Amino acid sequence: MNMRSLIGDKPIIAIAFSWCVLLSGSLLCADENASSGTDVTRLRIATYNASLYGKSEGMVAEKLRSGKNQQAKQIAAIVQTVRPDILLVNEIDYDDDAATAKWLRDLYFAKQDESAQPPREPIDYPYVYSAASNTGIASGMDLDNDGATDGANDAWGYGVYPGQYAFSVFSRYPIQGDAIRTFQKFLWADLPGAIRPTMPGDGKSFHDDDVWRSLRLSSKNHVDVPITIDGRVVHVLASHPTPPVFDGPEDRNGARNHDEIDFWRHYIENDPAIKDDSGHAGGLGKGEAFVILGDLNSDPLSGDSRRGAIESLLEHPRITDPQPRRMSADDSTPDEVANDTANFGRNGEMRADYVLPSRELTTIDAQVFWPSDGQPGERWIHASDHRLVWVDVELPTK
Image (cartoon, rainbow, N blue to C red; front, top):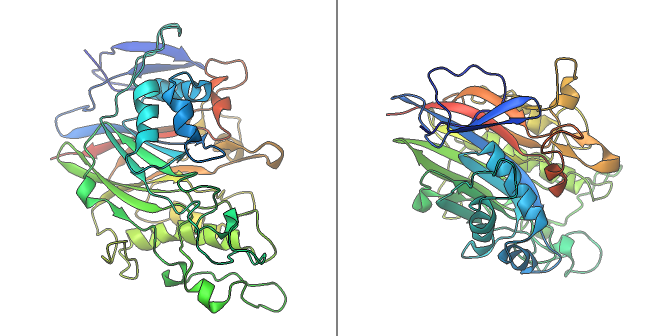
């Protein structure tokens, strides 16, 4: 009998497991049957900035196509171990037919690693959505005021080629493709309360009026991906705001990061000012289940971001913050360390990656895949400077 996957020491009742492994002192057991009862479905939802980007267009696809890329194998080892039902991968190239994402799925996630002991079970994601991205798309304008219009900073989202740093959603459940809403072209100036970057001292706007009225809010995209799960719909709200650094005293990236995060507050409050790329206004109504996913590049306790936006999400009455803790943390580990999800080297460790379920979903467990040095799985995490974050939820089903 197959069972759902669970990491940690939470009790499980009336469950028979298909396989179990001991990882970093926690028993992980896998179950390919998503339902834990007749009227409740248990889901594992995860986000992972996998750092799968290249220096030129097509480079990532070429690496993955071989089926032998070591970075992708490490990423797959983590995914096959945690076994999320819904997974957002940040920083994987976009292409029109989702070919790059499908190479990762078919040649890594869905392949059994016979060299592992015990061999890791492959994981199938029949449904994949690759989101178009503003990265690398030339604006034709001087967005960084350096006198040129052809740099990576002059693209609608920072990037040296179109589709760099994009993201994809992998799902074991059907994605409602026709109902996906994208906000790639939503204008920054149209966000209520938008922070227009200004120079300190004289308060002069960094961008002239023509540029400001043309800027897109999303550095990649904001997407609402509805997924049907046993008769219910869960809206996967995915994005990857720009890092709040790599700018100047005007703090244009800090302002943009804040407003990219704040977009989701307006969306879950059904603000009519929000319009998708098809021109439809508004966001989610009351009672609609959702989860906000992604590398949001903002830590509520440290770092250089404007923290008001992330704090508003974490404290929002429609949202639960599960506060996932790294798997190596114990009761003595401070929250500001235990909740970190990324290691930026000299810039330290931060909480940057989030899985934030709506209150229509009951949170059961949550964790950051971050084993200690020398523990099983520790070598895999070096595939990226971010760690996979997962949350287990229960969804009442019809």
